[in-house]
Amino acid sequence: MDDAAALPLDVETKVIERPGDHKEELRLWLRLLSCKVLIENEIRRKLRDNYDITLPRFDLMAQLDKAPGGMKLGELSQRLMVSNGNITGLVDRLVSQGLLDRQPSPTDRRTQLVKLTAEGRRAFRAMAAAHENWIADLFCDLSKNEQETLMRLLGKAKNSARKALG
Image: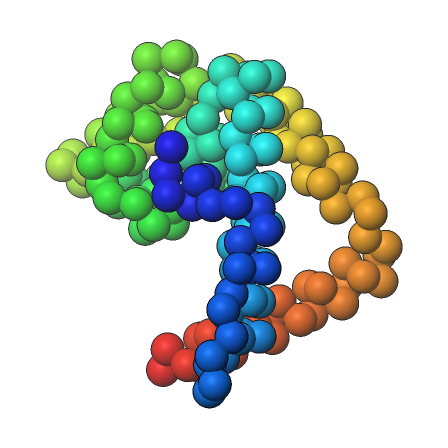
């Protein structure tokens, strides 16, 4: 189990106040992290239980579904923000399951191009439809207005973080 998955769901309530601390910002960060862990763990469980697939494999297939002509391994690595070695392992497993096809690039034989097979595309789209419903269920207690407000505020938070990073 990774460290994030071991965090208690109410970790943001354990922030200790100290003069001059940024208590509210820290509580916000911990609340966001708790939500991320809770949701991600449930999606991982549902993908495993219903489709016998991991979230990283699902994410890789999602990228390839958007690129019918296929993608280079390096492109997948950049988009998924993981090492080339991780991508190779994921691709190997999906190829062995008949969900991906891997061939040398027609423009550069040193580069491999991967794409979903017809079976892979069918399997992914079934998983993606279920995934969409699972996400909707997880946010069902938020009204459309609340969802829009949360999206706007999270967008603002994302821009604030980017600005702080320079």
